[in-house]
Length: 370
Image 1 (cartoon, rainbow, N blue to C red):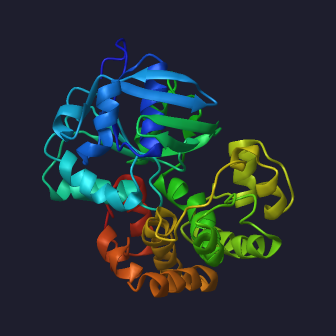
Image 2: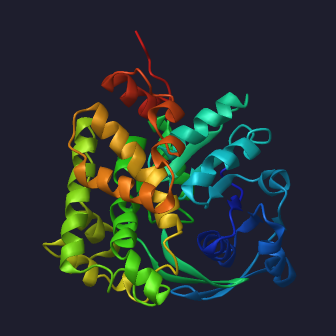
């Protein structure tokens, strides 16, 4: 990549997050292409030739190419920002594989748990051996919502978001190239750190399942974090968080942080318990609950976040009572088996590997068996 030229971006996904990111990049003055597989969802954006942004950032982001043809969108771009639910990472990798070229950077926003590993594995399976860097953010940079067919609102831009690549030696390079655009990104030690400091896994499924009756009775007419997190719910969140941290420690992740510490880092909220920290965060104010429990907080965060965390926990002898309870409840509600459809060890290519071999896959992209 020529560092003297202005970066060209592709944003994959025209949901609320993808619209916010595409518009923000365009407002910042970058050339931005936008892809969505469903044409009807981007047709209003095509008519407007861009996206109107509200909230913390305001303005109109004029886009370069808006298309349901992924080759047209990613061709000639430097950085490809994938902003789709984690259950879509696999299909996006399959669609990108024939067209990704040397020097391009793919960033999952966010990767949830082991997203970059899954994406890289699929590129290899599809025969793409180009020098493509695959990275993932620990969390999505915005608290945002789509406000209309061609409008998005950014409630808050998060601070100090770790980002890591596979191999981990490329993380500094990716963050360095993004610095002019998003100084909020910082280098993570490895994808182990970004995967297991996955706060969506802590907050989203539990708050949704524990508020299932309220969601169904009111069609989500309450503030998800402000009203959905009572003292009892917060206590359950703290145990889920504890289990996640213990799994990360088993993987020898030195930079795993608690949910309270993350809220301090991302939102500058300082409290001594999770209930007070959530309720002191202005970034959560105004975010309404989903209108149904059939939402990505379950369909994404259970199979792509809690399932792999549970898999690692069981492999290394960590008590996963709270996380397993949420997975089991979700299986009952949806009449499915998220363990089979999610990021289990078989899907991640980690079956029959030792702890050190698994660490090597995360850090170097291969087990380095002796």
